[in-house]
Image (cartoon, rainbow, N blue to C red):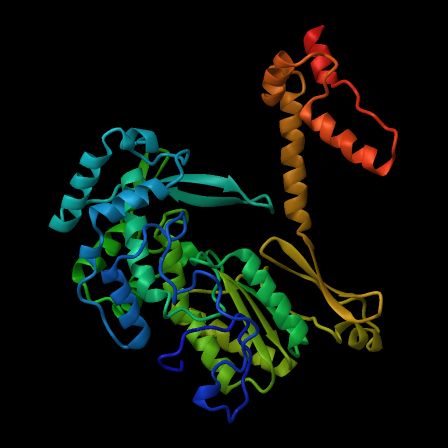
Length: 457
């Protein structure tokens, strides 16, 4: 299924020649390794956490060289130092969990709290708190449920994720981009654009899994984890997080399936689940069953698959539904579409008397078949209209809320400047604006800032 002892380098995997030898594993690559990929050491930061120790480097090396290895001792890598680095990597202004403990509260006696957490984890007496259920609006008007974990759980989950990333970053395939160190939505968009423009893509499948985070089967999740993890303490710890439950309106509900969207460990667990449920199967299908070029880009539960032939696309979609059903997943019919898209889509649709090629949305952008001034095909991306309208409405509401507030409340940066300067001195924003204007139209000077003048009156 996968070539052993090879890093997953391709950004946009495509179908290689049928007679390609193992040494030609990089035939389908479009670009080199992304910065910060699994072959490099983990670096400090919000995404990577604490710098990897030599012991964690050995775990990464074994995971990369032996794809069948199962790790029996992982929990001891969750040290006090790693917990401390995980705490400092958290956002200080993040919302608290059900216990109401904020980042500042936990940090008042940080070392004692970390020592206590570390001891409880290794004694087996650690018990996670249920997540606090909140809802945030989506661009289409619906509500997205989130689970906010307590701060102590966030610290431990981030430390565990760093340890597990040393294993799974060597296993994940190249077309998986969601919530991984060194990868971002921009890289996924670039990979998709490169695949559509450089490969023979005539059909695009826009697939979305219905309620993915709420539909993850705990039994399959543990089976997938056991492929690489044999440390029973680590597996029990993950099982505790899966079954911690949520609190909504003061009532606690048990979690029999799914993982809270918003927890630090959820993105990794989601990637592991889809790695076995979708990625490996899709890569095998691309290599064995596709008759033409095929590209795949996945970001979390959003998949874009490009095909050269329509029959390949239809067969893949039919088999994908059965594959996902095996793991208690299903495609959202209102969001899953197979459309004609690519460099020849406009011409072929014109010959059949149809309109312009359809568009599709991916990661907040609408992808459009367009042409350059020379008449060549180009892929155009514009902001998704639903998200744009939602953002404009939010800005309008905020402006109306501030409309009758006094100047110090509306613009916190102006009053301090106005008190320290004379009425004839332009404010920095006005100065920069008139400086640019003066370079285009010589002779134009600067004006007195209206905010400064009104503040002096």
